[in-house]
View 1: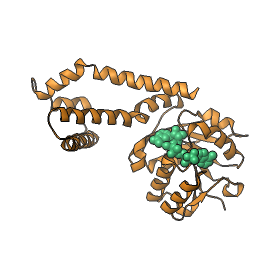
View 2: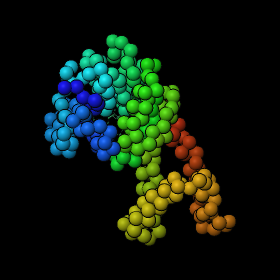
View 3: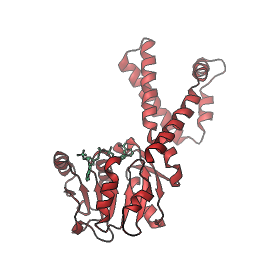
View 4: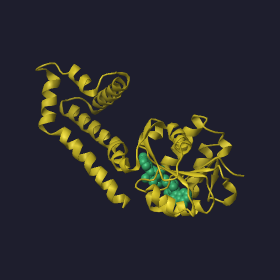
Length: 268
Ligand SMILES: NC(=O)c1ccc[n+]([C@@H]2O[C@H](COP(=O)([O-])OP(=O)(O)OC[C@H]3O[C@@H](n4cnc5c(N)ncnc54)[C@H](OP(=O)(O)O)[C@@H]3O)[C@@H](O)[C@H]2O)c1
């Protein structure tokens, strides 16, 4: 029997996608399959996703002309897996593999194939991710919509040209780690001012959660929202002066530039 969608690699990203697709009723569980090499992971996936086929390998009879494949394996294995997928005659491919260009995936196939490349980030694990997608040389508007609908089940999706995917990697792909570092530093700062770690954590996480929601709901820019809590000569102004003095803004410019460059290097 052929499946509508086959996710190759049932790790963190692959299982988050299956979870999102099932929750969004993207298709019936029986039309979905996960290919996973690790035996233990296969039994965990079968238990977690009843009705979804969990396979040890991809076979010809799993694939029809309309079958889509999502590549969710680590970058080191991805080209080999793409060559294997190519032997089965799949209809189109969505890749979440960091650093692997659409051209390299296309080259694994004997003929033209629609390839959409994406860069999601870790909040897809709770269906609050943000992903960017870019099409290869053979994609149609329908292929991009298809990819958008898959990643849309685990968060929001933006379209970019492929040359911008390294910048996306440096910004939103690595972004959660920058954010966690800032949270960590602020909790430590609260502890240094005499608050318990528990209280500091609650205050900092609540502050970020509320501020993010305000930013999403408000029509105002981050600059305007910041100005509203910065009374002339007040406490926030004193804190911000210290941050500007330590060049926090420049540090973020350099962090994103460094991560973008590293993404370019890894993709070569
Ligand atoms: N996690 C993220 O936040 C994130 C964000 C952006 C992009 N990505 C991309 O997503 C991809 C997957 O990342 P991940 O975090 O989900 O990794 P992961 O948790 O290690 O999952 C990869 C899974 O694929 C399995 N696998 C390896 N070779 C296979 C094959 N030939 N056929 C079928 N399954 C195979 C692995 O099994 P073994 O463990 O036995 O090798 C593992 O269970 C990566 O390319 C990464 O660049 C991830």
